[in-house]
Image 1 (tube, protein in one colour):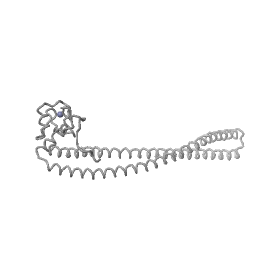
Image 2 (cartoon, protein in one colour):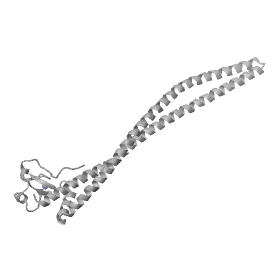
Image 3 (cartoon, protein in one colour):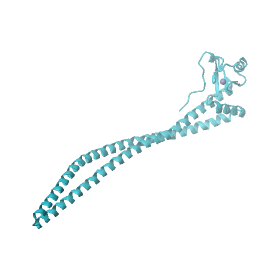
Image 4 (cartoon, helix red, strand yellow):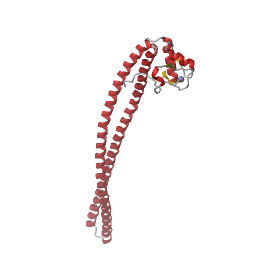
Length: 250
Ligand SMILES: [Zn+2]
């Protein structure tokens, strides 16, 4: 194998690591956002539940005041009854008192229903609080993990970038420029093996001339269809197409 091919394959491997590293890095932000959104949703649910208990409490106080007002009316009518000597007036006041008592009875029924509501609302707050606390704990640990992953990844990417720069500096400028041009066009597989007389990148059949150049192992050969840089090793005809390069470290 040509030395330049070997160097290009190492470069290509580092580029693949960088592609994958960048993609992983890009995914961390949205993952973090989703986690925080989940946290905010449970906090919003807790706020709703707390608002509901406040509503019930306000309503309970209103009912108390209404009952109090009717009781005051009853007291007033009773005093008036003591002061009147007219039978009709006395009877009218009795009717008023009875009306007030009926209203109070209705209000007391409402108060009982409200007590059930208050109980349910306070249980809902308890549940929402437990849920919010649990999610908060989970999200905090998830965010810490993501931050740690991001930090490691950035460090690793920095290392690979530096290594990539060193490798690139060792290459002939024109060859590097060609590699980078094809990479822009075709993506991360730039240096590809020949497999069954076809380009390992675009899988088009290669001409005899190109195959001879490849096998000659003396100069670089390019696929006439996709411009990828081709290389040939003896075991290639027997094995599946390989896009080569050592494994990645991410
Ligand atoms: Zn091709």
